[in-house]
Length: 93
Image 1 (tube, rainbow, N blue to C red):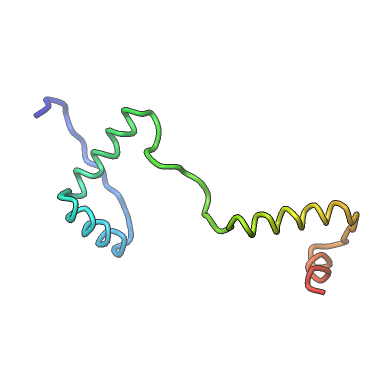
Image 2 (cartoon, rainbow, N blue to C red; image 1 turned 30 degrees about the vertical axis):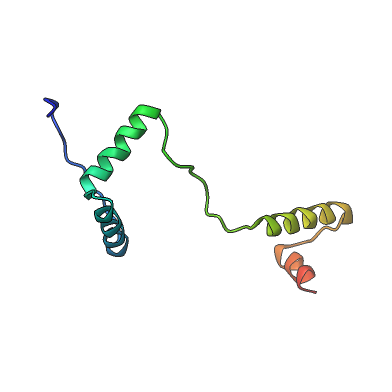
């Protein structure tokens, strides 16, 4: 055991997530404290998170292509709108 002074860490998380993760960790033979320590040690060792961080994934590759095509069409059309509502109305017609 290390002679380092330890400190407490308090984390707030919804009950459902906690229970689900706790069950998964138990299946792996780990408790919450050990899993958090492993996460922190990995961050310390690699100087980065052990997973990719990004915004919510709400677009598929297909929807990205559709959006890109729409943007190209909009640039070519040279349309302008007096308000956001006018744009929305145009899109819906």
